[in-house]
Image 1: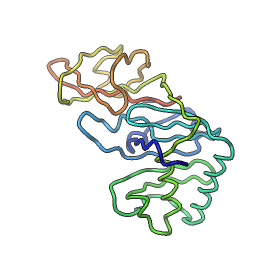
Image 2: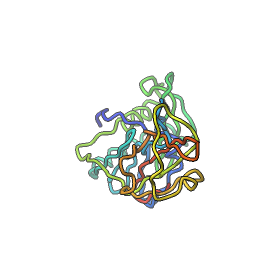
Image 3: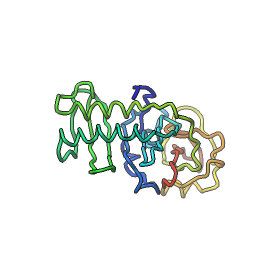
Image 4: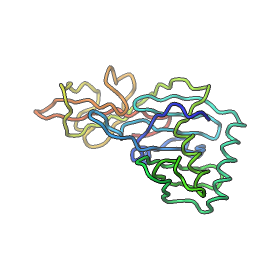
Length: 224
């Protein structure tokens, strides 16, 4: 796989995601996205989800793309996973590749399941972790000829008390601000209008307070 499309997704947010295709998940990769002014990493779409039938979704700061792997391409990933399992029996928990702030979580549902959180630069991994480091690096830079834009049907609308630099908008969604403060709300894509989505946050003024609002893209079957 070519190391292209270096798009990152927040680790914590995706860890709580739930999809209707749970039984058909092949693997997922979540990566920690660095925060910045006006950026809410927890609202970024998932970095990578591959299903058993080869369908996959990759996410960046705001947008998602989808495509489909051929059977032989899935088999190639399976073989790499088998080699990792043989090299690291009982792999789970956390492993450190070396220096560096990069963090990711790889969860494999196909075959003998395992989940591992990695830290550090994969290029600095010791010999006994090189197979795992290589796979994590390739999945984090996932690219494929079948990639095409994916337009989510729903978003998770979330509001929190806070402020951002610059001006603010007025609440214009069909669900109340109070509901979105209590918990993320599912919102149809048609109701998002021209609001920023993904990790790009917006500022809202209401009731003499300011709020930080995000719209996290949801995958098919995923709940807020």
